[in-house]
Image 1 (cartoon, rainbow, N blue to C red):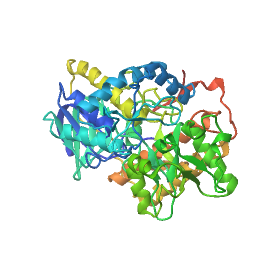
Image 2 (cartoon, rainbow, N blue to C red; image 1 turned 60 degrees about the vertical axis):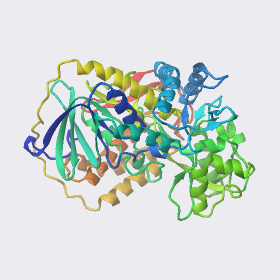
Image 3 (cartoon, one colour; image 1 turned 30 degrees about the vertical axis):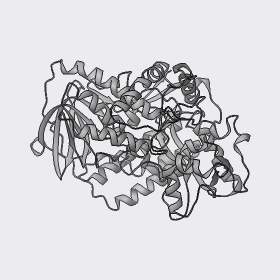
Image 4 (spheres, one colour; image 1 turned 90 degrees about the vertical axis):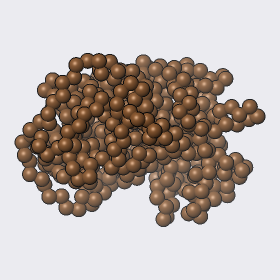
Length: 536
């Protein structure tokens, strides 16, 4: 069903060029990893759009690190494991919590300007859901990601060992007969290019555009997931999708993330009747893990036959709201909502993929010389549910480790190979590709959403099955490649959700509403092999 390549090409069609390392993606994972590798090697960064267009650029809350007095890596570890619901890799979590603080200092050295407070201008820290301490560094109130991207992109632009190619679509990874990754095929300015490298790093972000409603930008179309899968890399934990509980739902306004930090600063959730409801669902109330808050909101929406609940922070001083959340305040005010006086209508939307391309503690996949970092990867840090603000920490910690590991490859002999000659497949004419994508997104929302059942998941797979013949054809346009990547990842996600007959973290089954110790294991997919179940 799944073709090895999604474009027709011959070796003669593609321009060939070489580099030490090629990185696909420009969020914090791609930019930071590039800077670390560029200390000793030449790097090419492929940007799907511009250098600063990424999920990271939209990150509001911040980056988690145990740097405060009274905090510790041990406490950060315990919070991460609690949120992950038994499926975290303890070794990966230990790496994160112990190595993260030093690398946050490195972000500052590279020019990131986190918010300061107090007479001594110490780093300002906030608290988010399921954290036991205030350990979230933030910038410009609620624009942390944009500040990190600004600083890292500035460093990348002036680094002579880094070449940036914008508006380049990475199509497929190229592998040798022994399975080792030798670079990738990409499209740029309507031409095909084969970039040969000694190591390849996927930092392509998530798969948010599988869903109709998401906090993710348009570029997050599961490209890294599907590319890696077609090349033989293992995908793990795809059923665990994090739905952010509080995303703006308002006529005329796009879906817009209302940071968890708003609840960290005292906001409460109210249903359509104005009643606060989270105390009835969890002892941590509004700061419970995201999956619990998201399901509670959906339950209240169903009870009241509404389409949203309200986020209320009107009891806090207006000066605090405006200074701490300037981006959110301005966005809402543009649509006539004043956070200082109005309750904000919110509902869950897809936010983050806990699963992804399976890696070891140095970011390497089962495909030799292929690495993954950031949301596209599954390092084991997040388990079944990501702890808030651990994503940016994970990116720098494992980006640094990838850089350490890649250095060893540069000293090894690496024979470049030519592009393979693949059998020609005639393109399938694709009409109304945007309509097909919208249909897929609606299927994922309806049947593979916050709450799932055997019936809904089978319905999803049946709907996708009607589109499955498209997977065997070749395509020539980025919009078509994006759709095939989305369809590939959506089918695997729905299949994983159907197989896991329990509820855990970001995966909830109405027909199996409790955790089952028999499911303390991971579901892994590998092209040509099928489903693999691995114990924790």
